[in-house]
Image (cartoon, rainbow, N blue to C red; front, side, top):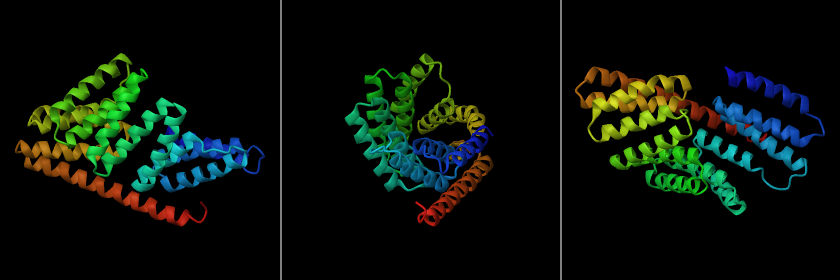
Length: 278
């Protein structure tokens, strides 16, 4: 609800600045609206706004790419499932940020590359990206950045069967989150902990973690994480002989996955329709 209200405000800002000589302000308004659209799953519309923002920044006399905008475009391509395009933008942005010594953005780009590789099934490359992100954040005393990277690292370690290493990464992440008094990532901490415990055959403990994670993920509204939870919970219930419950959770996972893939295909087709405008 808050995001939709912010989107309505951004619509008004863009409408007010259309035709105005303040091209940089228009670019910033389009960029903000695109970020909100992307959060709401409107990836094709978001990319259209980002490309219009790019043009507005150029019209204002800015002769270089705006770093935050490049990151927004890359994240949106990742969300739409266009991994090659996303990787190209992330890699380009990463090189620019390293040249400028903007280490917070370097870490952010490395983590985003980690998520991209993880989602596209390349756990080994994802692991390398998260390890580099954690190292960069640690070197520059960014405890929160270290913690977020360690959660991503743990997820890839689970995918690679490195369950003890994953639990160690999660313990380290919790220490950093606690030091920062940050609980925004509790849902993923619980979900990945459950997956690591399940990998070690501790399915009862895994289910307890999934049970605690479920309301947090539902409140956050991340359908991809919810699908991952249902799939993981189904596997643990099956391992414990709870066949009927396992089947129910697997159906929930399958239905959600179909919805997510359908939405991705829809956004990709809309992007093709908008290409003439971009």
